[in-house]
Every structure is written in C-alpha cells, then in structure tokens.
Image (cartoon, rainbow, N blue to C red; front, side, top):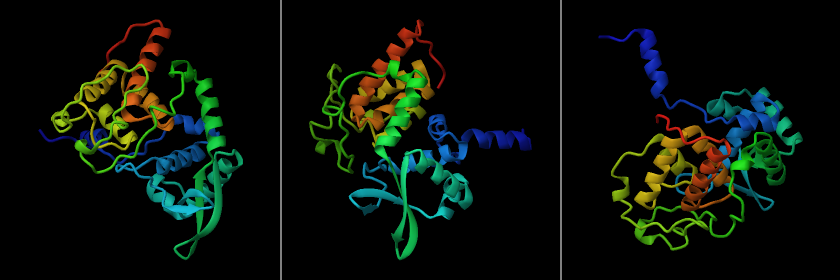
Length: 263
C-alpha cells in the first residue's frame, strides 16, 4: 500500500539526519535562545573530530580559535548575520566566549573561542541549579582519566595508558577490537563513540556496558553524563565507569529501581 504524503513525511522525519544537536543548558547559560544555539555550535567546533584531533585550525596569541564569517552560520544552524552579531555580543558580555576580528586568508574574519573560566563557571552554576552535580562522581579525574588523542592506528598500537581503567573500575579483559564490532552499534553506543572521537570500543565489554546503560536509563540521561565526562577530559574507558556509577547513584537517590526503556 502506498504511503500518504503525511506518512511519507513522518517516515522522513523519523530517519533524517538533518538535525542540530542543541542542548537546553546552553540556553540557560546564555539566557537567550539564539545565543544558546550559537554557543552550542561553538562548543561543537571545540570538540575533537573523528580522528581525535582538534577542529580548530587557527592559532593566535597562544590560543586556538574558530575562524568563521557571520554568513557561514546560516548553513550550520540557520541564524542570520544580524542574529549572529547580537548573539555573539551576548555570549561575550556574559564571559562565555572571547571574540575578536582578525585576518584570515587575507580577509577580515571573526575569531571566536570559548573562555574556559567564564564558560565553566556558568556550566557549573547551571548543573548545580538543575541538581545534576548530586549524580556526578567525585574525585580528581585529571590523571588516570585524561583523554588521549585517537589516531588511525589499529588496536595493536594502542598504548597501555589509553586502555587504563578509571580508579575503582574493574579490570576488563582485552578482546579483539575487530570482533567487538561485529554487531551494529546502538544510537547510544554511537553517541558515546562520537563524543570521545573514537571509531570503535576498545573491548567488547565496553560496548556491552554502554548498551546496557542505554537500555536501563535511556539515551538522554546517558548522553547528559557522557557529555560531562567528555568535558572533564576522561578517556573512553574511564568515562564508561564513571557514567555507570553516576547513573546508579542517581537511581538510588531518586529512590527507585532501574526501569528499562526502549532504545
């Protein structure tokens, strides 16, 4: 039976990748919808690419910058140059980003970068307001969980440091990385890999644990804590252990047992 035009549209809507990954917390930090959308996209450009390397290509005054003209944002997030001007002023006034005009490829181009102190102060303030810090693991994550660049090398070239477990995390049995990917990844597993710039999980156990967390708690909560772990600079393995503990702690503090949701 042929689908109706509306059914055709709904099928497209369900499967299309023509989306913007836009998190509500950025609106709260910016105090404005359009400014929050721009901040969200600026954050995206600060994340490592699939190869683990930075997407920022301009170095100036000891910092890496995003060089992008006002008109370029329309293709990415559908905001006009006038909206960009207003939004960037709001973000700059709030201390979330540093903005300056400079020269790039022979043309005057806006340079933008996150202001670490102002950004993290606003992020911490909003997560505390939303009660999320109660569920996040405590302790220093700068040593064993520091992320290492992901390269095109195979699992045979992976260093011991890259495979280190987070403090308190059980030691995982090493398995053939290729065999760990014989089953297609779930949306939650793919999200986890993308956040940490990895092409695959290092072990089958890692993949299964992320899939189980997605099934137990849902992809939205999994994404929320995985993003926190990525911002903290954790490794993929360290993040999985910390996110798992945080989700279990959240469920316990909410006084409920885990309710499994569909993927």
